[in-house]
Length: 127
Image (spheres, rainbow, N blue to C red):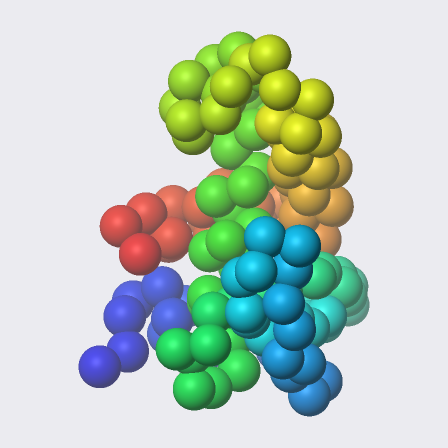
């Protein structure tokens, strides 16, 4: 059954996902890696996306957007707050790099969704 957020996204955002590539990262995690292109109004946003091998289908717009919105929470937090909220070590350079990547994603997502960012954020609550 489709959720309200999935229906909300399906009605507004198109997603193009090229063939998924099965790969393994340096920690041994086997996953599908791809670049998804989201289209909204007259704007496009490309984003890397990974999903575990248990996922039989390519991601939906709602799944990708939900992940991007989660990452975007970094914009409203200090690094220390973000570490505390997401379980990262504030003394870790890798954690800082992840935090900065999330902030970058947030800026891109705000530009992509424009004035409708908060509407999508509210629609995603509880997804």
